[in-house]
Length: 310
Image (cartoon, rainbow, N blue to C red; front, side):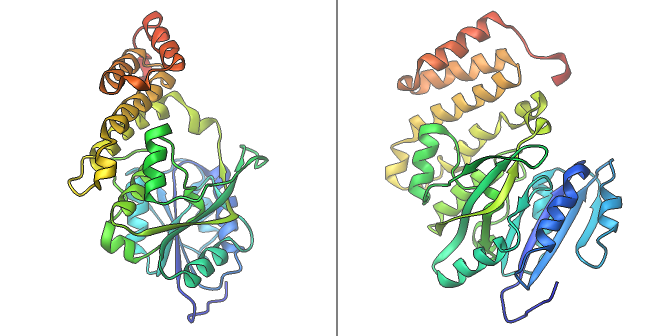
């Protein structure tokens, strides 16, 4: 990869844990980019599969190291601390960039829009084999839209692997929150918004994000369940939250409990699901719907949680 030091250095971090079957495709999607100033850091988070053998093949082309398992979010933070780029991003080891120009398009947008701190693009959803399942067209989004979408659906509109961030964000906002297991990017976009940094949308596909069986396991749902109440407490209980959003706290808190209930329901932990549903209803009764009542009934007919969840 030819370097051009006249252009901003872009640091890409890939955390990887036991995803050897996808890792090489991710690496190649970075190495095949036409942007000429990339620092690529791949961190092996204690994998027990063939990950290290794959990384050794790319000595001299990427920066990589292995460490004991510490988790995805701390690994990304470690990579960002090791990095030198003026623009940073992370892409997971089961996702890929659009070849050859995803990174260049992200950088060109930031160079043309100096008031923008974070740019995000669209993406393709792909399956385990890499086949395109659907096109994800992300809506234009600012902090207000993020908050209102949280109130309405508790989903996030920004596609993480299609996102590029100016480094000064780390100085002002800090790093990803290691206490957030799954939705750390959602918490980060909201935190950036509370500092009044501008977030902008580039209406072009920049990445492919992969949904596969390993990302939909019962244990994964159980681990990510606490994220949503944690994010509510961290973002919506801030003393400096604008009044227009403080007035929506009840709706937001109710939604956080209901999204937690949904995650526990997917994890087959019906007792916890019922607890969080009832709490969500009591906080803001207008959030009650037939869909939620149906889920609530299921929790009364099915008891307990799977033994293997501990």
